[in-house]
Image (cartoon, rainbow, N blue to C red):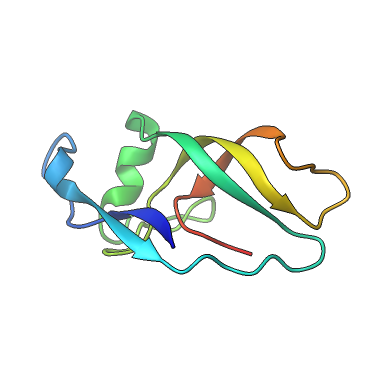
Length: 102
């Protein structure tokens, strides 16, 4: 099982801990050309606050949905890879949703 940080409710003002929740999800299978990471740090800085509002998305990023993983800048480690550019143990910094994908 993997864990995802989800948007539990729309923040009113500055986000607080109760605006988020941790949910379990099954670990996905890694397909050819993909890799699986473990997020070790997620930054939910002020720049992402706007996307927590309902109907706030734009052509760059859609609005975050309730009970869906939050989007942020993450530091991650590759756990499994079937992608020729990424090896197990590689460290990444990227904009990911905090949910498992394959």
